[in-house]
Length: 484
Ligand code: URP
Ligand code: ZN
Ligand code: ZN
Ligand code: ZN
Image (cartoon, rainbow, N blue to C red; front, side, top):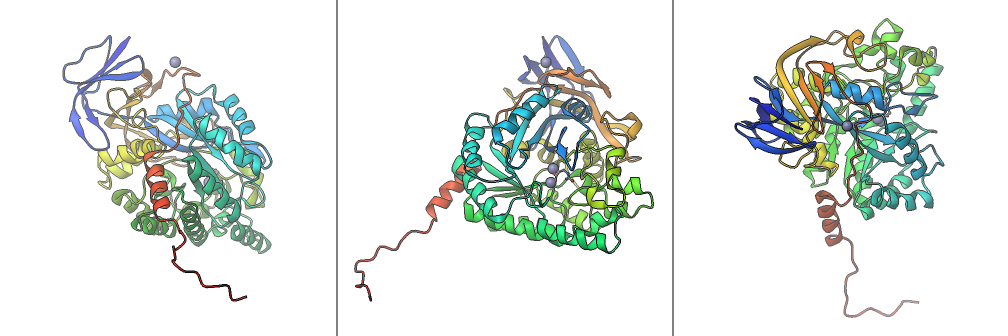
């Protein structure tokens, strides 16, 4: 069966134009005027855009003594309802666990996904087994990105020597390292001091992770990646210090990308000073929300291109789970949701305010990350041959975000009460209509793993440059006799 999307304006990262889009067998087969198909979706007054790609989710993630509540089923349903058609989750070995073993655990969970998905592989410890299995992960499992935590001391954190070894291995394999950049040693010291001083509430979480610890770690990760000859993707960039480090690196020709979250773009640190413990704890995540100056910096980064992708870091815990940390903020599970709200929130606060053009919106929600992850133009494009992951976006449709109406399985929403204007009319996942005017008709288990090969264009260019500029011995005609 074929589906045709008629009368809309196709909006891609570089172009807006009127055209119909024909979909057959899950892929786009024609773009142009007067197309016909078995099923007709009317896009009058709408933008026809590549579905969103969220490069940063934690679905059913074991973390801080519990599991994040949205799993691959509820999480991907939430994604689709908000126009996101692909998620990239983190396969997370516990320290000492093999990478392939962890991947098996993630495969066991992802079978219920309603939209396509891929994985980043986390490196949470280091030895020869990890070194060896990284090659298998890249060459046989179609994963070209490796995540490193510079925070969560005593759990997921890796040290500088491990970062260097893993980044160097990434460079050899044509893969790209990712970092959660916060100085985990300093966060641990500040947390202990704050608790000892009686700062036990959720605001202590914000006090324990000032912007300086993120800025320092971002600079350090950039330096280590440069020494190891690898590009670098910095997840959840939340502040000016981290943005400054990324900006400076880019200006020096380094291959570094930054990823602000929709939460950091639109919510600020005042949330942690709310008198209601639950309100504040529900917003505990790392890095924490920042003040308006940092938000302005992130928006400017998206406008100027020094920051590349908007993600959610969707890691949803219920209020009951958050209450594990009553009396000790370090035990509040870190993480917030946002999968179904990312696109409407970014459209409202970005395109609706004139900070972003519709084309820039597509770039930062879909196309840029598809290129960085080396799955473009299968994903992130409206082109003949691309997967028909499409959102038909109605810029006039509006709603008030309410937890009681959300798809996510948790009992609150950090964007509660926000008015959004710009919502999907239709969402297609590989050609199948999964959302019609807010109603989900998705198919459980429809999602497929998206393999991502190594040696993307940037990896290849960087390794060429690093080989050309590598230190080499000076050839000398005469060598003096040894002084011994
Ligand atoms: O607080 C957060 N961000 N939780 C999820 C894990 C991580 O650090 O990304
Ligand atoms: Zn993180
Ligand atoms: Zn994360
Ligand atoms: Zn299907």
